[in-house]
Each structure stands twice: as structure tokens, then as C-alpha cells.
Amino acid sequence: MTTSNPLACVVLISGRGSNLAALIKARDSGVIPLEIALVISNKPQAKGLNIARSAGIPVACIEAQDFADRDQFDLKLRQLIEACSADLVILAGFMRILGAPLVNNFSNRIINLHPSLLPKYPGLDTYNRVLEAADPEFGASIHFVTSKLDAGTVISQIRLPVHSTDTAATLASRLQPWEHKLLVATLGLFSKFTVSSNNDMLLIDDKTYEQPFILASDGSLHSACST
Ligand code: GRF
Image (cartoon, rainbow, N blue to C red; front, side, top):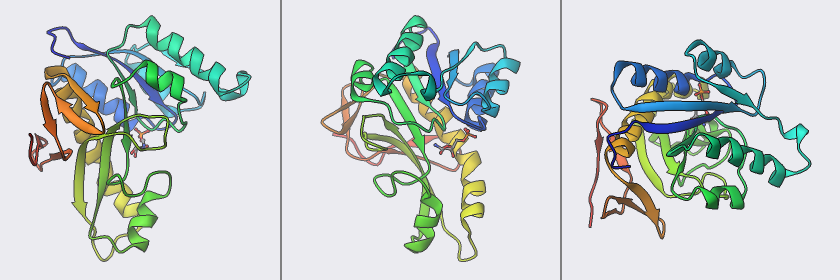
């Protein structure tokens, strides 16, 4: 979004909300011009709802069990998102697949944070899958959301080494602060440029990138190459 207005976001969560907390911190410190218009959870007990409430952010909770089917749930979600005129929808630990009608309605405007180096390990249990495959590195990806699980164009990644002593728990705790940095840096990209996907290629304004941006140790994003 090439605008001097803050990037208006809706954040979807299902649990802890540490990434939401990182976004609130970035907003409050002025690191990125961000407005968090609404936080939506599909779990009423999600701890992240309290983080949002404490920060004075409006919250909504919608549970799948209250809707006849996926389409009805997605329709409600769409109405909530449209009511706040959001530029971007951020899935930060939102544990539910969104249907094609909803995703297509917000084309290039829904992103997800996933704890693996996509396209490796979509879905659950990513850390154990890294260890079982004896991968030398692991990390997290931010990608555009499609109706296929963890499958849209990857925008950015953090890549970290796997140590011989690592367990799923140590991988998860080592990655967590980097996920926060990755999310904030990626939103910085959205606040400055028009970020989109075309034929599974990443576009920043009118430049095409064949590889995702990589987060450096100083928290900045770097591209491998562009065309
Ligand atoms: C993160 O690890 C993210 O990669 C995954 O869900 C987790 C969300 O954590 N999609 P939190 O709720 O933001 O603390």
C-alpha cells in the first residue's frame, strides 16, 4: 500500500497472541504506521484476546460451531473484515483454513505466518518434521493465503540453523522472537510498497522476485534477486 495513512489491519488469532503483541509494540513505538482495527479469534479462550483488549483494540470471537457450514463462517468473517475497511488481514496463529470465496475476495490481502521454510512442511508438527529429516536449517515463512493449506506465494522468511542438541521445543522457542521480527519487518514492506502475487511470483511495486525476502540478523529484509 503506497499510502501515508497507517496500514489498516485485521489480525486473526486462535491462541497465545505473541505475534499480535509484537505488532502492538511495533505500532506503539512507531516502527511501522499501523492501525490494528480489529482482532478476531475463532477460540473464545484465546489468550491473545486479552492482549488485544488490554491494548484497547476491538475484538470479535466467532466459533465454527455456531455456523451451519464453512461458507457461513467465512461469510461472517468477510463481513467483519469489510466493516473495518482493512488493507491487510494477518493470520497470526489462526488455526483454520479459509475457503476459496473468502480468500479470492481479499486477493493479495491476506497473509499467514507459518513456522517452516515453505514449501517444506505445510500443516502441523513442523519442528518434528525438520528433526526427522535432519534438515540443517529451519525457520518461518510469511505467505499470501490461498484456499490450499500454507500454499500461497512466500513473501519473506527467517532461516536459522538447527543444532545437534535441538528438540522440537528448543526450535520453537528459538524461532519465536524471530517470527515477531519477521512479521514486523514484512508489514514494514506492506506499509511502503504495493506487495502482491501474480502467477505465484512475488511482486513489490512493479518488480518481480523469484525468491522470498530473507530476514537478516539486524531485523531487516533482503532480497536475493529481482527481475
Ligand atoms: C506461531 O508460531 C506461528 O508460526 C504459528 O502459530 C504461532 C502463533 O503464535 N502459525 P502466537 O499465538 O502469535 O503466540
